[in-house]
Length: 158
Image 1 (cartoon, helix red, strand yellow):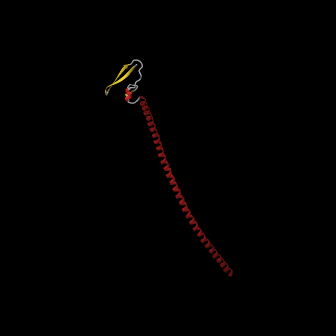
Image 2 (cartoon, helix red, strand yellow):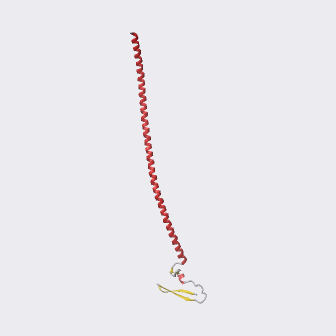
Image 3 (tube, rainbow, N blue to C red):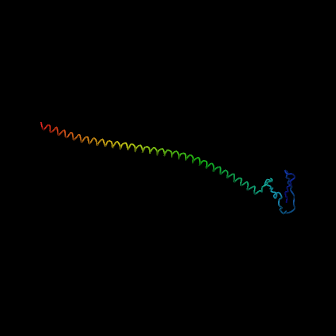
C-alpha cells in the first residue's frame, strides 16, 4: 500500500513523495496532523482540521442566512414603523379636528346661553312693560268710567 510522505526542503516548498510499504502498516500518527497541518479533498495544505473547516463553512452559511433574515426583518420593521408614523400623523390630525369641533361646540353653546339670557332679559323687560301698560289701561279705564259717569250726570241734569 503506497504511503505519502511530505518533506520540507525550504519554508516555501513542500515536497511530496510516495513510499511503498510491504503489507499492512499500522497507522502511525501523521506528523503534519500533530503539527496542526491537514490536507483537504483537493490535496491543499490546510491549518484547520477538515471537520472544523466544514463546521466553519456551515456556520458561515448559517450566519449569512441569519444576516439575510435580519435584513428582511429590518425591512419589515422599517415598513411597520413608517406605517405607524403615518397612522400616528392621521390620528393626530383627527385628534386636532375633534378638539376644534369640541371647541366650536362649546363656543356655540356659550353663544346660545348668552342669547338665551338676552332673550330672557327681553322677556322680563316686555313683561314689565306689559304690567305698566295694564296698570295704565286700568287707570285710563277708571278715568274713562268716571268721565262717562260725569257726562251722564251732566246730561241728566240738563
